[in-house]
Image (cartoon, rainbow, N blue to C red; front, top):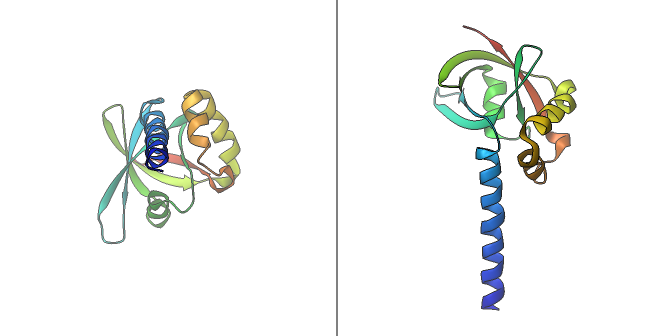
Amino acid sequence: MRGFILLVAFLVAVVGGAFMLASEYGGEVVTLWTTDERGIEYSTSLWVVEDAGSQWLRAGSIDSGWYQRLRARPEIKLERNGELRRYLAQPHPDQTARINALMARDYGFADRLISIARDESRSVAIRLNRLD
C-alpha cells in the first residue's frame, strides 16, 4: 500500500511539473496586472497572441480570479518584453475558437498539454485595446 501511495504522489508531481513547465516555458509569457474592489493589484502569468494588430489573452475558465477582476475592472496593465502598458480588456466569447487556434499554433505542444486540464467550452478570448 505504501508503494502505491508513493507511486501516486510521484505521478501527481510529474504531471503537475509538466503542466507548470508547459505553462511557463511553452512560449512567450506576459504578466497581467488586475485590481480588485479594494484596489489591491494581482499579477498573473499568461500567454498572449497577436492577430490583426491586436493582442489577445485567453481565460481558461470564466471562474478564474483574474478573469473576474478583469470583468469588474477592465482597465488593466500588461507587462510584455519589459514594457508595462495600460489596456482596456474586452472579452469576446465569439472569438474564442479563433484565439484557441492561434494559441495552439503559437504554443504547440504546451498548449495541447494545458488543454487537457481545460474545458474549452468555459474558455473566453480577451482583446486588449491600448490606452497609452
